[in-house]
Amino acid sequence: MSVTILGIESSCDDTSAAVICDGRLLSNVIASQSVHEEYGGVVPELASRAHQQNIVPVVDTALKRAGITKTDLSAIAFTLGPGLLGSLLVGTSFAKGLSLGLRIPIIDVNHLHGHVLSHFVRENDDDEVPAFPYLCLLISGGNSQLILVKDFGDMEVLGQTIDDAAGEAFDKCAKVMGLPYPGGPHIDRLAAEGNPKAFHFAKPHIDGLNYSFSGLKTSFLYTLRDNLKVNPDFIEQNKADLAASLQRTIIEILLDKLDAAVKLTRVKTVAIGGGVSANSGVRQAVADYCERRHIKAFIPKRAFTTDNAAMVAIAGYYKYLNNDFCPYDKVPYARVTI
Ligand code: KG4
Image (cartoon, rainbow, N blue to C red; front, side, top):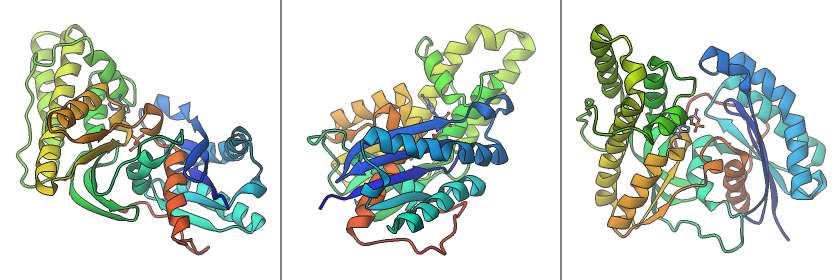
């Protein structure tokens, strides 16, 4: 009998629902929230309210696009955490209510597991998926982690940021350049036209496989401050070079530790995930690195880099196969690691 999972993701500012049947994606619907743009960041209370408005139509559309009805579902997988508590509560409560109504089980998914396992979402039957063990570089607005993935539920964090995440480095530097939030995609766009060697920013010296991005941010700020003193139009005149140099430095920091982790673990497969894995420079650099070292690279489609329910549904699918279900008294959590 086939296994059909509805996935629900509501951990931050995207309401998403997806349907996966026997590991194959049938639909993936995402409603993004534009309400936060004017505040320069996600406003938690506004996010929860928008989730409440979006969740029913988003789930309904996902079922319709998948060509199924709710009675075809085997189970409902949902993000229990980490994320914004109010936002998580909307997805969690909806999943619990629907499961009680349909008399089918619920499966809680760790959002980070979802990102790591997003490479198992197959859009076609012959899509290739990673072989265990593999190394996942998880880079988003809240995380920068190097994870050794030994099995669907067996992951070891080898290193992570001790301060800012890679996405925060993009966003905070973009903010001081006057770019809209989130700044990562804007830096990516500008960097394509700039000289990546025009400016040199500080790089961290951290032992082991941990990351640090706050020193780079400070160094970027000092460069702007010193130059603005003598040229008030400095940012405007140099924005492509600033973006390209910032992006190059972030990529070098990411790749340094990725290389150390590959040498330590001797894995033959590397995957990237999370919002920052949408960055053109990061994608190219990881692909080039893997080619040089004869390592298989899994670079997600851009649709699967940001928060989406397809990754929640696939993580839930493998828990379903393990009979790993969620009791109804489990509540969302704001913070957790792998
Ligand atoms: O995984 P994600 O959607 O959610 C959070 O962790 O919040 O990641 C969002 C992050 C933001 O920092 C955003 O600026 C960054 O991903 N991002 C990018 C690009 N697209 C999204 N950073 C650099 N280049 C991009 N093209």
